[in-house]
Length: 208
Image (cartoon, rainbow, N blue to C red; front, side, top):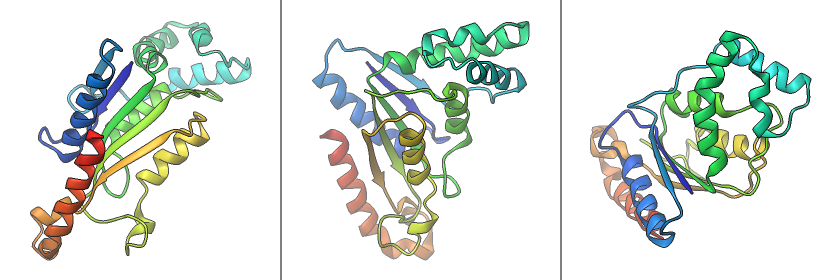
């Protein structure tokens, strides 16, 4: 199954365009494999609360590593309410073999809508080995290797470290369209051609 998430606050965004191309290509190549879509901006996931942290504490204290047993941690009414939010999100992740995330870079990192989703589905020492993550990303500037702002990239670096370090997933792919602000920002308008080249390359990779 493909789990497809979009996190951009813009309805017509480059990250949504890239993730849509990838999803269409994947579904054509895997007919009948299953597909679930979530718009994290239009239907935001609530931020975690204290009851959620209590679920985490119980899972950690009792060394529960089987995701199917996490619901055992919900013992009080507040914890069961927190689990009711988590369960459908986690079920989608567990059922997926590929998790596609369309996201912009906001303030050098990821949108809060995406972070809220990550917080809800993440528990101590859990593993999603055997799955693949694909991130279709749009960035206002250029943050790739060798660029002046490479060190400011807390989007790819954070997500790659998170997927590998916490979920133990090594199969992580990033598809970036960079310099999208060259379309509207006069100070970098001279980089419009580089943006167009980056976008074309990203769309080609998403379709591949």
